Image 1 (tube, one colour):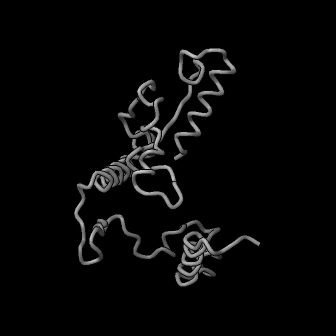
Image 2 (cartoon, helix red, strand yellow):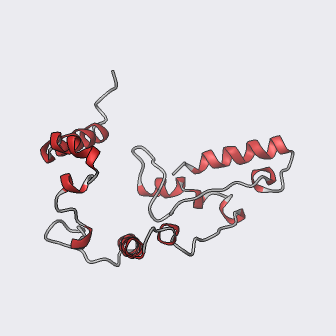
Image 3 (cartoon, rainbow, N blue to C red):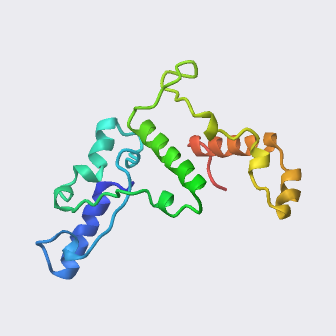
Length: 166
């Protein structure tokens, strides 16, 4: 999520441009979306207090915004069939439970490790990638060790601030 100062700067700019100091964003409709339980702004080297302070909810704009809540899961509604809709609804509920701290933890893994239901695990990722005839050549050439290595390299790159782009 973006730092609240960015939203406040856009607000000031639109108020100036529209010559309307009375309404947020100069009276223009400004649509924001996201789940504030899951995304906080990144404050490099910041404390938890600084991160919370950077959130839009800490801005003077927040009380002036109209909040609308999504009441129905649009993915479930637009599912192709009943089976897919059920699967999506179960996954959505699982994500909500994890986000709200209601899901079982698995202390055997780590202090706050979660238990992932068996039906949400992919037993054979190579087979699950695609069952299309045209993808068989790709699957034949891929192997799980190569995919694991690629993911490990990506995370090492993301998590290592010492790495620079050439």
